[in-house]
Length: 252
Image 1 (cartoon, rainbow, N blue to C red):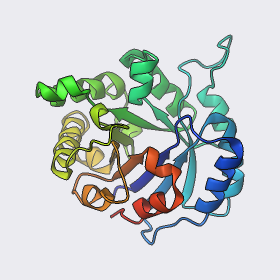
Image 2: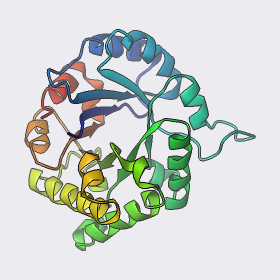
Image 3: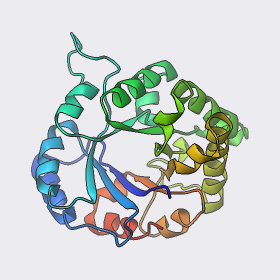
Image 4: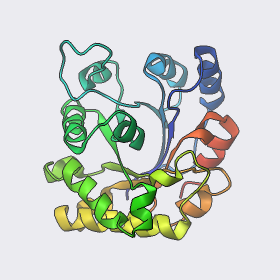
């Protein structure tokens, strides 16, 4: 049975004291579902603090929001997957639409980052999703399929078992717009079929596919209730403890 996951992406938000307060509010966050997991992707300076505050709750894991495609060297300001691993970080978001669009990370760079993360025993949360123009032209299926092919299809099958993919329609991130539950299910099913065609039904069935795009406490239960939606990658709502706890409680 694939994991149900509520992952928070804090992005570039919260000063240090604010972050500590939110972490303290969330440190007892839990779910009755033994197959569910909570992941908090916090800014780099807060990773170790988050681990320390949350260490008593084994159901919450700490994630980084990005990593370098390079092993080490003269890359000022970059953070390697090896560094994350050496700090005990087990998850990293790779290929978020903001990294693709604002920082010009193409499929080749994202593929390299995936390799760095896996090679250092850090589980990627691989993001994919289409912009509004692609959706309006009804080209979203092929667009997302290409992202999967370019980012993941070079991996050996065993690397994909229990993998995490986050589908984030770019037009629904930070806009207040949300894909309907039916739209989310349709794309999640498409992603699973694409992965099944490449890697087989067993591996495709083990992959947790999260929805990311203005997930809120008010819509999480309906979205997460879809058969191929295995939780969410949550932005703004994850910065409010009560809202994020409600989202965690909406996991199947």
